[in-house]
Image 1 (cartoon, rainbow, N blue to C red):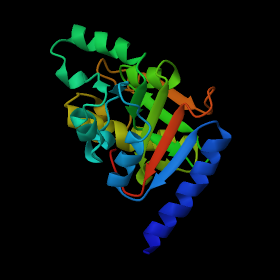
Image 2 (image 1 turned 60 degrees about the vertical axis):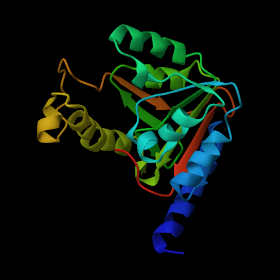
Image 3 (image 1 turned 90 degrees about the vertical axis):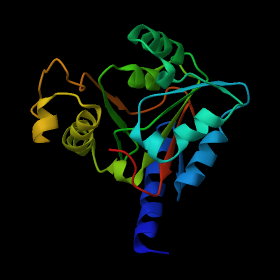
Length: 212
């Protein structure tokens, strides 16, 4: 076993133990394929499923699995044609059975740290769906909440703005200027320190790097 694999497993176990203290379930999968299989095992036939925008879900193959599994109903924002349709779907997603997302960062102590533009993703994380499945590569693990926000502002947000073609200062400089730009996607900052419902939030850590 390589040094990196051993490191990932040990770090993941530390995070998983700390998630448990916070009423969240944690799992470690070495590969994306194993992670997708684990995630699907938590969904019951006939359930309604939705998701928050995530490069991790796309890159690890979770979105492909969700779109081609006929055992459940997927509320898919990709099928909306207008903003009105998308807004309606966002509201419907808040009462789905299972909501998928990634996390911008996860601290070693088991805190989930996220920043959102629209807010639908963090809203679902906080309340609504019966269960939330968070999938994250080991590149999302940081030491502290301060490190999490540094990672989000200096890596995740600039890259997402570039990817989406959003005109913000950080998309040009790749340095956060704490802007109040009309196009700012740093509108909601949420730290999940604990789940009020034991096991509602399930975090699947993947032994690879995914997303921003």
